[in-house]
Amino acid sequence: MTDSRAGRIKGRGAIGNVDGRFAQRVVEAVDDGWYRDGEPAPHPATQVTDESARSIISQNDSPDLPFAQSINPYRGCEHGCFYCFARPTHSYLELSPGLDFETKLYAKTNAAERLRAELTKPGYRCLPIALGTNTDPYQPIERRYRITRQVLELLAECRHPFSIVTKNAMVERDLDLLAPMAEQNVVKVFLSVTTLDNRLAAKMEPRASAPHRRLQAIKRLCDAGVPTGVMFAPVIPMVNDAELEAVLTASREAGADSAGYVLVRLPHELKGLFRDWLREHLPERADRVMSLIRQSRGGAEYDATFGKRMRGEGVFADLIARRFATCRRKLGFTGGRERVLDSAQFVAPRKATAQGELF
Image (cartoon, rainbow, N blue to C red; front, side, top):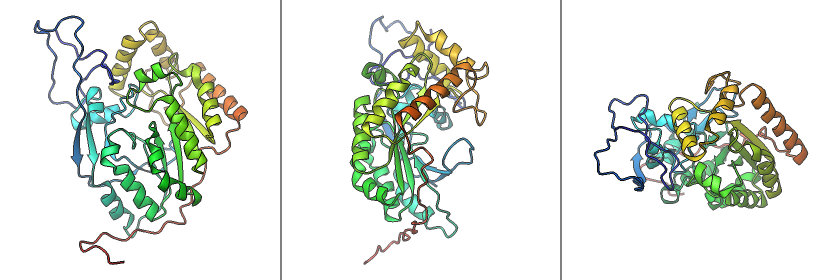
């Protein structure tokens, strides 16, 4: 008997370790008679591999994303969000978008070094850099590696504008850098809050900060003068969509000045992983959830068309858009994702030298 589904594993989001679409070798779990019903599934430990990046700034020309440059200090993400659209990127490493994505991580230990080299290039054009566009810059291993911290120190040194999206209250750690940069209008932060239900959050995003801690982080950032917004992302039909107004209200009360949302996206292998999670955790709703997703994606489970992939289309998607717009207006969100960060203050950092600097 073969099965790519590993079953529910405490502290992990994915139900299985499906093969990536570029896998050249396939590993199958076989029942050899030793496994007994009711035995707990194995608990894979987090493995981190140091990676020396050849470049660190990624360029983006997508018309439906509000940034042109991004940095991802890590590959894979230990938060384990079962719905993460970035999971299929692990396939490029010949790893599974399932459990491998949240247990086999890569840390770009030379990120700050490469960033300094790229910022000092004569033709470099300063545009805001987005952190957290693919994997979370404040996932748990950041406590040990501090790569995001090193990147922020360099951005602060040269007054380079940037934004952060995270599900982790660890962002509070860097208030000593963020607060002064906020005074210079070169930083904004978004906390992603998908639910206020701790039990649901533990299933959806098992190693991210609890919902109340994210709200506390919003308040502490705002109290320190850092412009902070909330992202209700992703919106999942019949899983968390009913909480849209409650999440926006709680975030506004915490001080958030802007809000955004994204409809759940299921590219490549994520479709199967998503269905497995639904069958395991919400079997009575699984078919209805997938039906609403297809209704919002032109009959398919995903549509990557620019202009549609973030918001979807159809009756359900239009309803979410109207609810969001109404709630945003009633709560008085005024900062908006359109806040323009100041790029004029940028001063290229000094080039790294083998001998260091005296002054």
